[in-house]
Length: 175
Image 1 (cartoon, rainbow, N blue to C red):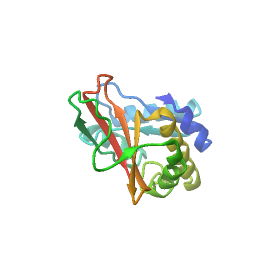
Image 2 (image 1 turned 60 degrees about the horizontal axis):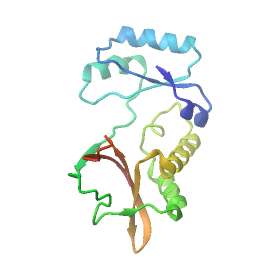
Image 3 (image 1 turned 180 degrees about the horizontal axis):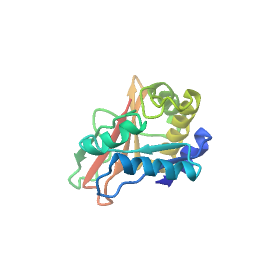
């Protein structure tokens, strides 16, 4: 596991993310990991587990971990067109959109990884998404697109290039 500085600052507790190698994990190993984390002062652990890795998921659930979120990603091949605007659904982000995007995130993220975690306070979860969205707009995302209705932002999409040749783009969509 490794310290998650951003989340620790936002939530005011020492948080870590469990980093997996390719090996399988047993329930006993999860218990040992939890004991080690507790001895090092960690108060919250998170693990990202692919939904297809049922054995790994089943090693964590009996140890008190909660399944709190799922993330769906899809890819759109750009075939070296150089086009960054997804026609028909959005427009590129403008700095004037920042406050509206933060407001959208505040209301949109309620059934998510943090709000679904009973050990975290809801007001801190709201603050997390405010700070995370600010960071997206300030360069965490490779691109941000705004979805408008009648020239008023009603949603947004973030884009992260999976390589620097821009052959394929992965989107995490929240609206």
